[in-house]
Image 1: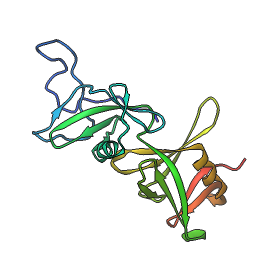
Image 2: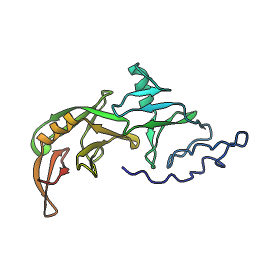
Image 3: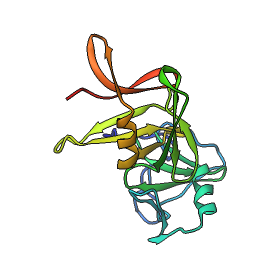
Image 4: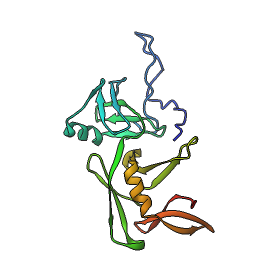
Length: 196
């Protein structure tokens, strides 16, 4: 996913701290802060490719603490991630996406089935119009990278095993006079790709 150039949101009056001359961090694009929220600089929060959280280089091992952070995590219109509390807004460095999809199950059969994904944190999302599937192809290898749209602009990346499980459920359908491979869930056909 290509991130658009971040625009000035009006959150900061200028780009440099008067005392130090250091460049200020730009606030989240498309997220309007309240008058009580303070924009923090880099606090050392990082989410790696496996969905593991780090604070200043150390792995956060307490699941309850990670769950708390997930509750206030948002992704802005530029694709940047932020912890947003009633009092503070702080950036989070995310290697790819914030969530990793580690579970899948099917409820029902045929066109009325619902495919449900589970994140590493145990939250479940039904593949649907609200939580759509997005397939990004690697420009060099043409290998697919599957993502599920989640709440607050966030996404979850399907592990290779989960994507293979999904691909095994795939059927062929004709969409706009073109044959496509995909799956049915929540009454919609979700395209995975073109037939080989």
